[in-house]
Image (cartoon, rainbow, N blue to C red; front, side):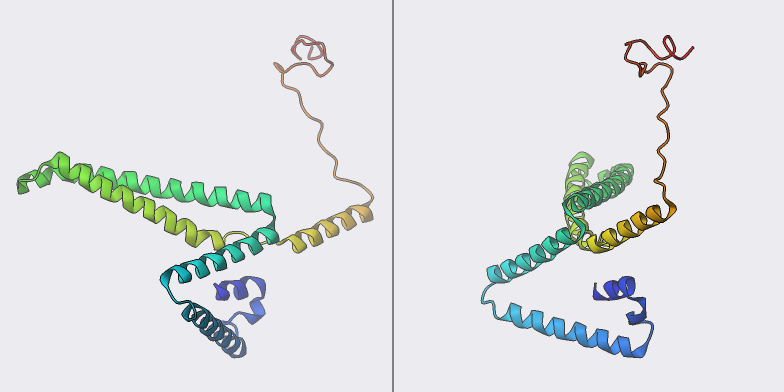
Length: 197
């Protein structure tokens, strides 16, 4: 994760680019791992470790929400959820189709094909649910963050400055009215019967 942050936000410090930054990156990673192990070892039971890791994830996610904004964070969540579920559901359907085509061979092994199909189908469905959860959990921290809030503000300022220099705003196109849409004059007639002639 740290490598990705370095590679995206400062290519000159990317560990693959030079030996000095590679040493800095490895020392930072080792120190962070030591600190994390020390904090986890100070917790006495498994419930404490789970609570510590959950708090750490919630803190990270709250910082990410603050960074990109609530609306963008919700859009990223919806995108990740829908994309993951769609991909894994299609994969599950393909697997079930393959299972259906090969389940008849179980009859030769003195097993009821219908019972075997139900058992395998349930197992595959549960595996899909676990895969959806794990993929969403692994993808959400890595999605977005391309244009953080300060960068977006800076881009908006540059855009406003460019408009001030040129002295004109971007002209909006006149909204075209379809033939069967209501006439904009307010006559409650279709455009083709009123001003569309």
